[in-house]
Image (tube, rainbow, N blue to C red; front, side, top):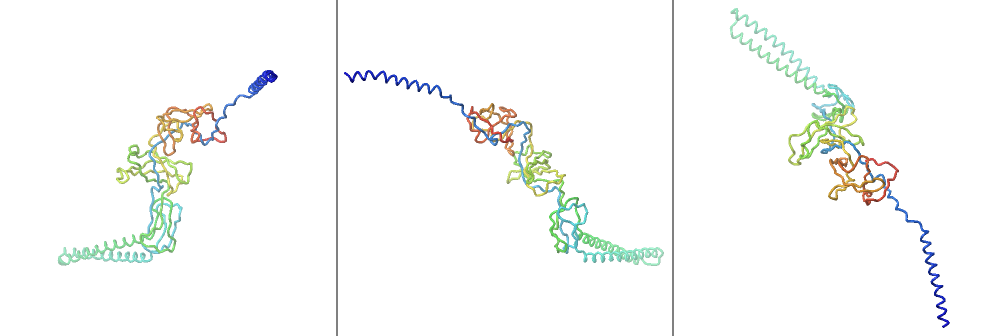
Length: 374
């Protein structure tokens, strides 16, 4: 009985302790602060691009090596020793200016001999003409026979032929002598000098080149399916090795009237003005024929997700990520840009790379250590 009484007396005490513990637990819960919202994702400037309102140009691409529109290789037309060299690489020359001379000693002797032979033939012909005239007068007076007149006229004719032959020999000797003097074929710049004074050269040997650097040309090929929009005068935009960040403008000069049956390509000649002479022959150039050009809102091709039914971009607006369906247009495959006709406005920020994988509605901010320009 005593034990039962003790248990009954302990029951209210245990309940009181339980109530007190529950109250303390409730008080601790009420004092805990509410959960804070998640911090926004920080995006680096390299993972964003701004939609720009600019001019978008498209067309077939071409590439090749720049060559001068006007160029000449100066070769030795006669063999011999180079007695004089008046040209060096990079030197500007005028049309007709002497560039080099080849030893002409033997040719001078041949020329002098041919000139002397001509004088002798002319003197003989003059005497023969006088004899023929005298014979005709005497024949008219009955002093000589007709046969003597015929002989005199034949001698005069033969002498005239010898004069013509002597003149031809002198002209040939003069031309040969003239070939020992090498002159600039047009106004230009000397390049690729391969000889020095004293060198012995053979006939046909290359001595140097003369280029006109004011106009360069690019010979390239365009796929046959793109040729309909390529016409003489169509503008071409160039980038040239060694001139990073600078663009040059040329135009289509000529288009081949036939397709290469092996490559299904059409040969195109493009001219590039170089009045400042900043470009030099031999540089590699990448170009694009501007067959279509108009103002457009553009974004990098990497910003467009074409995996779904419609293309979409991931835009950062109002501090949150959102998925936007867009309508695309022209594509600039050279600069990796795409026209957006609907869905974006100029100045909108789109996400690239890993940032484009953020879920819509995610709060985000751009790290402001630099400005992304694309």
